Image 1 (cartoon, helix red, strand yellow):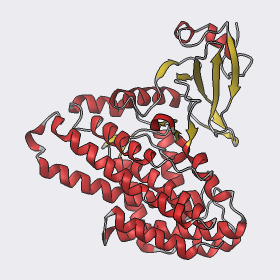
Image 2 (cartoon, rainbow, N blue to C red; image 1 turned 180 degrees about the vertical axis):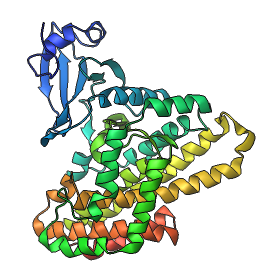
Image 3 (cartoon, rainbow, N blue to C red; image 1 turned 180 degrees about the horizontal axis):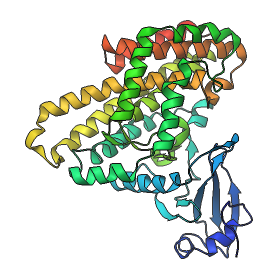
Image 4 (cartoon, rainbow, N blue to C red; image 1 turned 90 degrees about the horizontal axis):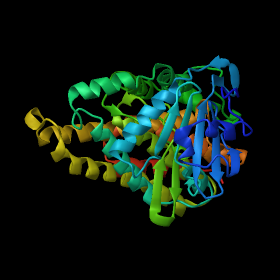
Length: 402
């Protein structure tokens, strides 16, 4: 019997043939291609196409990080991802891939093939902005955020879903990488020598550290809605035809504050704008920095549209809605700050910044760190996304070294 514990391109056809559910998706006897595309740190990913033009993606969790085989990671995360994707699909089928099956024995998740889409980060780096994606993601976060909250489902059902999606190991990674390690001496951290004074200033900034610490507490304690958990531009597929947008790879997902997902998108748009400024493209930077406002406006508009359908309106009048939305806006800014700073100082950096020439990278990194500080601290002076983005734009233009 073939061992499917760790799939390879050679064993994928046999694996498909052994699954009646997947035989309905692709024909294992008429395969055209099996391509391993996973370049992430924790999974094997294969795109399979048959000669009839049908496809499927197989995602198998590894028992350890690729970069460090001595770093074990639970393979049960693929089960949680299957549950999470199914729940997200239930509330917004427009913006997530369909789940075809989950194989608990081999930790394989089979999902919709989106090979006709492109990863948004790569498109942004190439200068193709896809403005429509921000609005789509705002609606996605609103639909899932409302639907999996106390407003969208009975309390007992919500508590059961909280329990089913507990993701202690991976959320601890988030807590460390996003909220702690960038602010201390740690082996995961690295910056250009010219940016070391910027990092020292960051770590001595008590106002910033206070905001990050409070945000970490909220991330740990707040079970507001079922998050994607890692909603950066590298986890979003876009396709200009039909303006299709799909969020994928939510294995870090769990219940948490809605602003964390919105902030993750916001942070990565700041990184993309910093790249554009570093390359001497201020108009494109301005175009990109308009998108966080679009994102948050679309989120709020969709959340308001869903509000009349809340399951128990007895003690949730409209005044509650205003407080909830104000809190999410404020949260989004500090989580954007934490996610942006982490990508400059800590582990798992991004190509937007890392592929710049050193001098340009120095200025872009400095700009992102200072912009992050502004988002975290100055949000209390004016929480308007428009005002905060104007401040970010000012900082990125000042620090750019072209």
